[in-house]
Amino acid sequence: MIQTFAFYLFAMLVIASGAMTILARNPVHSVLWLILAFFNAAGLMVIVGAEFIAMLLVIVYVGAVAVLFLFVVMMLNIDFAELRAGFIKNAPLGVAIAVILLAELVLGIGAYRAGVMELGTPLGDAAPLPGQSNIENIGLLLYGEYLFLFEVAGIILLVAMIGAIVLTHRKRPDNTRGHQNISKQVARRPQDATELKKPTIGQGVDIGGGEL
Amino acid sequence: MTEFFQSLGMTYEWAFFVASIAGILLIALPLMLAVAMIIYVDRKVLGAVMMRRGPNVVGPFGLLQSFADGLKVFLQETIIPSAANKGLFLIAPIIMFTVALAAWAVMPFSETLVLSDINVGLLYVLAISSLGVYGVVISGWASNSKYPFFSAMRAAAQMISYEVSIGFILVCVVLWAGTFNMNGIIEAQRGHGFGVINAYVFNPLIFPLWVMFFISALAETARAPFDLTEAESELVAGFQTEYSSMSFALFWLGEYANILLMCMLNAILFWGGWLPPFDWEPLYAVPGIVWILLKTFVFFLMFSWIWATVPRYRYDQLMRLGWKVFLPLSLVFVALTSGWLVLVEWA
Image (cartoon, rainbow over all chains, first blue to last red; front, side, top):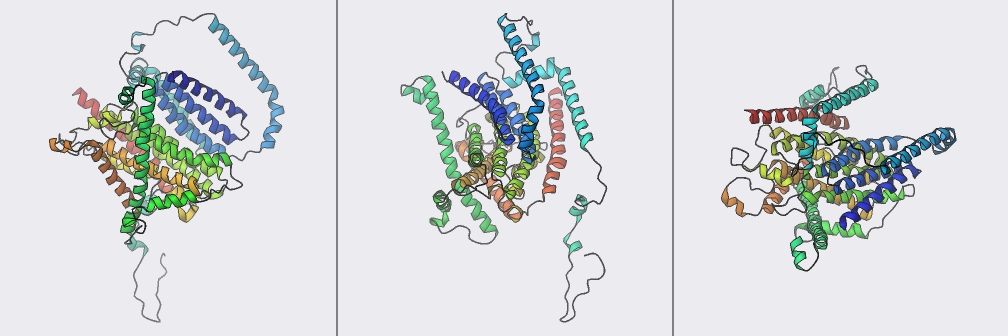
């Protein structure tokens, strides 16, 4: 009973917040609705027993990706009038994409109705081992059966990361304002910065021509 | 507890439901009391370090100071700035507070005293604590005011930076323990140090990780010396600037609940949680909850001691520490730890 209730609750919230992501006028609200959708999707994962995936969904998407997304959207100074002007211009493209998506949906439902496709039984190691937790199963699969694919995915991500860094990196000339020489700052001691003097009355202090 | 409610004649599902609610209340209410008292301790320690008395007027030794503050805040008027984004402005402190409470669901207070003893306990804590940043970011944006906005940007960058290194540190601990389950991690520490000490921290491969975790925990909870999100000399009061009354109090409570959570995580991951410090029979006579609360309290004292002692970091220093020092170091330790464990298993 509770499972069914929870499923419908999460499913409805996913759909509702997904819809609100598109419908919200304010882009920041859109991102927040998207985050709610992620969160409820994680709830659905918990219900089907994939608690590890659920936690990863929250940590990676909600905790890192969406925060950066929100960060960027908040900094954007979005002109709503300009956005609305662009609506008419992009309408044909939007309609085309909508038609393609609808066709795919109809095709998908049609194929589903026609019967289940035989995908073949999973390879010996790929079948989930009974009595082991999610994490152990995923670990055995990723680092055993699919080790090569996993490593390739890792390398592709690494290349993408280096690419992004190379694209945005600009070499700063030295001694620009705001450049910090940390080792110099750490090595600085009180006696380098201050000096104790005992001036006689009426004489003042000769601070010399040296560095302040 | 489910069995108890079942014995009252409920079906299993209802008994489970009622038991969960009762468990949540049994954690949340003492936690709120603990937060109130810990704020008092914090101010008292700060006072002692500054050679003044600290709160000493309300109740004996000023013990009721936090409750008086709570009452005052409760009676204040809630002010919503006219330019603020009203809905989000009110939701932000609620998010902060709820998230701070939610993480306590998996914290083991003793071997059996845990609300939900799930397999992915540590991941759950990591997931929930990564949500904490939303309360700050949303409040900063919804206030529609420049200082809160600066503070929100700082908070987002800071929390993401330190979460990465915390993640790697946790990976090392999990590699040693071989489980994500909180009780499993504590159990794995029994007699870990020289066969008698119930703690990971005296392992030379883990001690540097504990130091990094402790500093990252300070940064994650935005405590001094990393309290740049509410640096009063630069940002008025940071993201809380526009808040008043209960919405302000919720931030306050959530912040301290988070600090307690981090202190307890310290105790669980590195200092043996509810195990006594030494694997010596008479010490087990003391219930586990006493040990874990004692350890948590000691870590909290360290937090307030640091607050009173260390000056605030500069923002670029904070970022440098997170990305250029802790991240590479913790990565190296992941490699070292897994290498050592594989070597031990192989040899």
